[in-house]
Length: 143
Image (cartoon, rainbow, N blue to C red):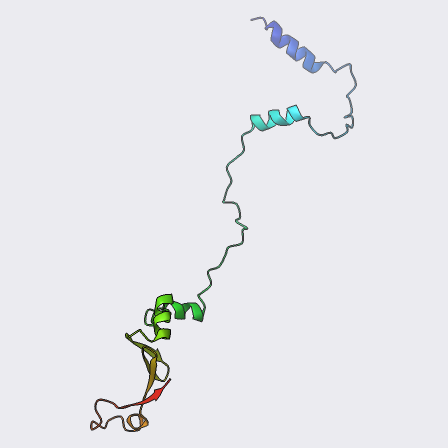
């Protein structure tokens, strides 16, 4: 079988040394790509999805516990602050409601313009198991 002509040409060019001398690489200046080339590259290569969530560097507001004064105002055991009508009625002496206020050392009773402080007697604190003084007596004084 005769050899193919294309194969012969390929072998001949591979065996023959090139007549042109080898070119050395020429140094070129580095330049930025033009805007159209950058846009073409951006469209051609879609961005890969991030491997993890980005860092959240925002400052977070910490929730501070309420102050003792705010806790005292929210306490359900304390009476509500009287409104303007109740204060006026108390000042005029026409308020006949009996109100109780808890204090650290006893109890305060108000009715109209009158006010009485009640404190536990010292005898009940000294002899707590004495059943002869029941109900427990209290010391009363004017506000």
